[in-house]
Image (cartoon, rainbow, N blue to C red; front, side, top):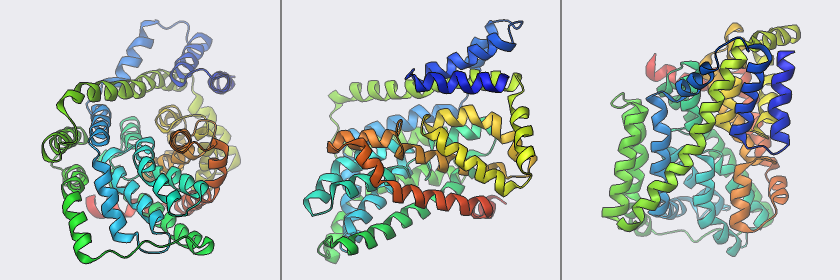
Amino acid sequence: MALIVFVVSLFGMLFLGVPIFMSIGASGLILYAYGMGDMEPILLVQRMFNGLNSFTLLAIPLFMLAGEVMNRGALSKKMVRFANCLLGWVHGGLGFTVAISCMFIAAILGSASAAAAMIGAIMIPEMVNRGYSKEFSCALTVAAGSIGPIIPPSIPMIIYGVIANVSIVELFAAGYVPGIAMGIMFMIYSYFFARKHGYPAEPKPTASEVWKSFKIAAPTLLLPVIIMGTILTGMCTPTESAILAVAYALFLSCVVYRTLPLRELKETFVNSAKSAAMVLVVIATASLLSWAVTVMNIPQMMADFVYSITDSPAVFLVIVNVLLVIAGMFLDAGSAIMILSPVLLPIALSLQVDPLAFGIIMVVNLSIGVLTPPVGLNLYVVSSLSGMDILRIAKACMPFIVMIFAMLIVCSFFPQILTFLPNLLYA
């Protein structure tokens, strides 16, 4: 009965349009009233506070601040120009530029919507002017933006690592495999799609033009090297690396390129604080719901249900993939991880599923959610940039969704694909 109360209360409120953090918090209160009324109410506040009382979680607002500084400082434009010089001259080259640029942005921000917004504002008008269809341009931007939370640093990976007590450094290392694979798949699809529809190739740049664009972009390209280099080598924790990212982004924007006036710094900090507050309030309420779910023994109920269907780890992961695709339609990745990890992770561990591989599968799967209505954030971002109807963009995204899901199925049967790099680096 507790499981039914949990599902109906949460998804019922989401269906009615109640804001996500309110839906999550109210579901936790309903579970408390249903089966834990004898406990002191102060425990509810303590659980919410404890959910945020983490040095590691401090990396989230810091990376978001780095992204806001980078966006206002127009640093992404320099990376896009360099990416276009590298591969813009092949068939579907502007599609290659979108994918590569989103991979660069992902290696700095860890946010799907930020990557889609930054690249979409630059590339969608450019692709349409060069003869690409608006549907394809928008769909590719939406899909490439989904790489944002997969190539590290990744906000959902930080959240999962804190909940599951899994090394965030190893999660970051594992994220490169699916993130780069997605980028390559999108580029291959862009090539054949462009050949089929006769989209033009860009003029091939000279060596001096490539060198010039590299020199302009080089200081910005150092940013992902600083972030991940310090983390993967153990020189910095993710939080310390995020501080370096903010300092370096400010230095580039205010001193080197001078594209961010000092008078705009206040607004930059305020906007990033508002964005971080939206994420952190979800984490606080999700901590309350996760605690209530655990106390009500819902994970064991779910485990008994799964065991009645299968005891195969691969089949379990396929079921999880389907469940997460559905959850991702209604919840953002951070919220879904906070809610579902305490329920699904104990089952995965009992079936001998590597918690590292399980976390990457969760993050990649939930990245599909930004491509699907009704809550697909990238759809709304790109729709506002392009003026195109959300449902038309969502329909054009279907080939990209199929590619991501096919990769997930392969990783579910061969999780070693996800764990070999962290095992190689940290065995």
